[in-house]
Amino acid sequence: MIDLNSISTKPLITPTTHQMTLSDHWDHFLARVGYKRSQHRIKPGLYSIGDPQSDSPVFVTANYTLSFDALRSNLEGIDCYILVLDTFGVNVWCAAGKKTFGTDELVMKINATQLKKVIDRHILILPQLGAPGISAHEVKKRTGFKVQYGPVRASDLPEYLRTNRATPEMRKVIFGLSDRMVLISVDFKHNFLPTILLSIAAWLLLDGLLPASSVLAILFSASILFPILLPWLPSKNFSTKGFFLGFLTAIPFILVTLFGNTDTSLIHQISRALAYLLVIPPPVAYIGLNFTGATTFTSKSGVRREMLRYIPVMAWTFGTGILVMIASIFI
Image (cartoon, rainbow, N blue to C red):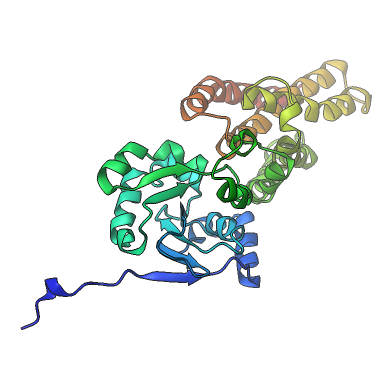
């Protein structure tokens, strides 16, 4: 009779490379435009690049394909292992906030992959943005593995490995123009259909008082101009930044209403201009508020406070504007 306990299972290691294929780039494109966002994931587990040995470095990442590919594409010429946690297809930073890139998941994957049988050097290199979800001392206590936090960006990993230290620049989180512009496609796609439907509804229900051009201007300002102009919009809150941009968006419509149509009464022109001033900024502010989830300088509690403070203001302002616009029909 065979003693099953005497049979040692061999750790399962999946080989991969640093090279991106056409299929990988297509997957990235679909993820960037928000197509089936929760399905861009790889199988959690242990992966290898090159010919790693027992003293090779081990990197930890999420099973979101963009996170995994951002890591491995910067490991050219480095023999190493990649331990992939199950974050349900969510990137490292967001998953850390949700605790799916967390202590329990890391401990479980260390044990499930039998990582102690693979390497002698019990050190794990985690992305810095994953720190909120990981208790390093708890991981050490439960597994014997020491947690080290690498640089913010995977592109700095080769230098980090060479010097075994992260410079202040490597630790600095920058939400630059290229980072912000990447978000445009997803936000534009999500808001495009509701914008078209709202444009049609505005034309039918408000008898043409709210032109489709104004609704499209809201979409353009909130989804495209907002991420581009984010650092230069005044105030710290995303909501007030959105209100300011919405005010700028409303100005052309206000000017056309006041000076472009002299066939109506002054009171009618003023009421229409006031309606634009009240109706356009709130949607821009609301869509702009969504970008709090895409930046690294907002906190969960801060976002919640901002939502509780400004969403009622957005709703009341927008509702009042609609009422003023309807009332202008009878003036």
